[in-house]
Length: 301
Image 1: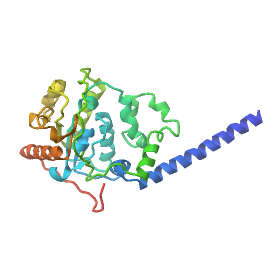
Image 2: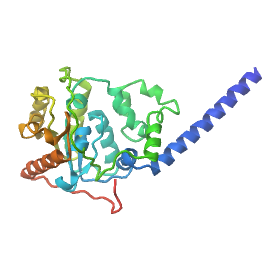
Image 3: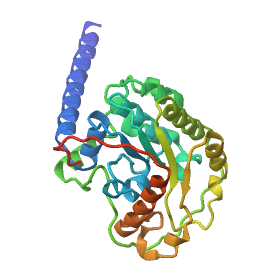
Image 4: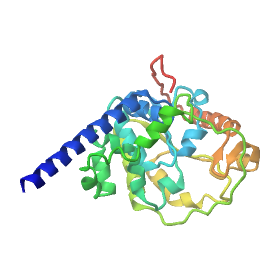
């Protein structure tokens, strides 16, 4: 029995040592990396911005802060409203933005899929105020999973190592445009099963902005895949009821009739993003919103 217990003790000690080494490696890499991981660390731990752009990859690649003027782009590839609400909780610990543009992407913000995938990049911040409540709400099993010491790192460590060795992307105020034109691949039309949980978080975003006196504007940037914006029908009603502007260019023929403005079916390229950012700036200026951004002089994220 004593031999068995001693083996258990040795195993637990080794496990603790491995966990400490893993955690220290994660934190070291997190402080050193650039690229996508460095940008994420900066946004979550340092950024103080009065004006931000939020949303999925369509936010990240379509909105040029240098054109819009004094914005920081915090859009994130393959992420939607659930992740964005977590990111906003991290940002508001330093300062709640005064102005927020949110690009709505149907797959990530309106329609059904596996919502637990939006928690991945928030796991290292699980113990920050307002984050664990999102985990418990979206996936109650996360309460148990987060008890395992390596769980919060298992989806991020390999990405950190990759960005440490060779950062794949560069950013200007969080923005990274696509270059050139790729072949257009046929897309599956959005299914029409709207996600109750995603709409719940859209309502939470609206309530948070109203409570904080943050000017909120929803947008839908151009894409080539779909000829109709009917997927936004329910969302448009919410915007009308809440008095939130919705600048809808989802099927805008000024863009969709010009293939050269697109990198692929769902994303504008640099030229298209530049034209679109200018149009959004003009539309916002007509609404007389005022906001500014304060960044450290050394910021190059």
